[in-house]
Length: 396
Image (cartoon, rainbow, N blue to C red; front, side, top):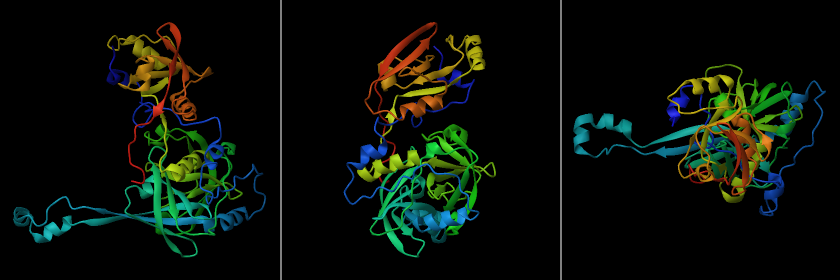
């Protein structure tokens, strides 16, 4: 039987499931229908804007910024990092000297990001990496007010975080539908890059559906929006807007090795996760326990011609399983290394990212039907995803 290492010689691994093959969350209801009924009465769900026409005013960016700018905030997070050395240890004092030991004293790390207000009573969305492990969080509004923020929950899998501030009557954003956007339409970013508050940049939506592996952060479970609107350090967590000033994404990443490439979490994904965080402090993701790659004719030929793999692949297309995690739902369902997934619930899938995106929409524990090819035999297996093993405590 082939090892994962042997197969990995032929292809770039797409990790499914937080380092382990995964696929999707929840339901036949929309996230807004499912969660809004259980939220506290004081929680005000932001308006979801209807599909609107392209901007016609030459000052449409100005109008969009005037509408949304007051609801965009700066987030300053800090955490204390403990000294790993005992500064009172006489041996260390003699070896390093007191002056050198002072360099190892407890220190405070600080970071700045952006966010936006989604309810008048103080619910704020940002990136998880902006506030993770933070001891204190301060939220600064455009009007100069500084409010203490409480991290309600974070989701490292999608890089979304939920913050609550004690306030009322706050300005809020309007949310669009990220599924309505198309490459070529306007994209406006508002945030605090490099500490420069309330900075506005504009460009277009360059592409949609970029996989996490394409973006260079394969541990995320997101199909990203790509934009050429300038996104710099400090923009993280701020809104990406369409020409009408409606939020279509959460700015999250830049490619250090390129210019004019920024990425945002689609607001459909970000809002769904944020609602779960505001409700329970955590978000759950379905987990199968497989590692998978896109199968191509070239990969099939390479595997079949190498006697050390011990595998015979008869399909040219599909999703190739290269590892099944011990004790995972995939093992219980009978999936094996070398199986090629052809269909999910009778719907054809051709890429690992497509399969991952589809499973992200199902309920944890919901039985799924997978059509697979094993050598020359096609069979159907039933599998029940479980919650992705927790990587990080809520709010940490």
